[in-house]
Amino acid sequence: MEASNLLTPVIIDVNNNESIQAAAKIVEEETGGNLYALINNAGIGRGGPLELTPVSDIKKMMDINVVGLMATTKAFLPMLRNGKGRIVNIGSSTSLVAFPGAGVYAASKFAVRAISDSLRVELKMFGIFVILIASVHVKTEIWQKEEKYKERTKSKIDPEISKLYTPLIKYGNKIIEETPRIPAEKIAQIVAHSLTVEKPKAYYYAGDAKTISWLARLPKSLLDKMFYSRIAKMQ
Image (cartoon, rainbow, N blue to C red):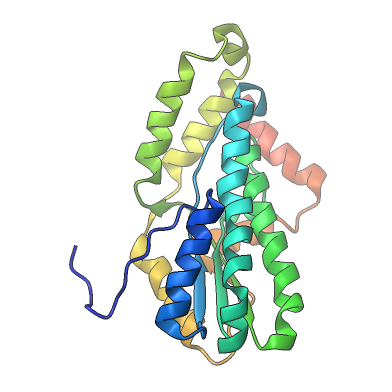
């Protein structure tokens, strides 16, 4: 892949604190301790009903999507404070509405939204902006990885229990099929805007995420009925 010779690639395993600290040291040396932006994009997706999701996978998702994001942000904060920089957290539309069958992933993204909301005020005194980008499905390799994950875990699931969730699984698959996947370049454009505009917004929406933000305002009883009626049709 071609890229500018001004770029210095740094490998970070957000699930490994030593890796995070080593990367922070490299960046500090390269920037003189003044950092303008941190973009938290690392994340994995794991769909499915809670009962069918192994606890080890729940922990892994939280470690990468939530703990890793916080640990990385914490490590780079001194440099961001010196540079009066910006933090961009790549969230999801599931941080606005938790769709049935995606509770674990939604929990991780709700956490990212909570972190963003808290840090936005917490770091304001230092001139640091904190931005959340909420998007629907993005066209990346995460979907192929999700399919491989489902194949790997299928053999570990009790088929009788899995059968009980057939309508919900069908509903989830239909949502994935029906939702257009926006190009990753679109997200990159929003990130670029949030880093260059004088006063960035707290939230940026991509694709149909704005519509989902409106759904989040509906009474929970109505939203539940809307979800359940669609799931019931999958019987």
